[in-house]
Length: 88
Image (cartoon, rainbow, N blue to C red; front, side):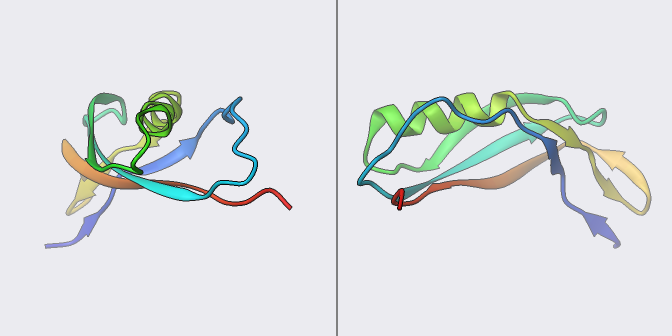
């Protein structure tokens, strides 16, 4: 089958500063056939509850293009990563 994942189209920037830190939060977002996120869960924590919550808030502000199978929109759990690095 021909499948295309759900893709974030736009996201608002985060207001948090992470001076001196870096890490990754892995989440899964349930995206409906219209590209709306209807659920999200942390799959792999960054080790910081604050940054895990920030990842969820960040992706909650995103607009998605829906996943498609054979050209038709489908509901899908889409894996996503929220990464941040050291400010230089």
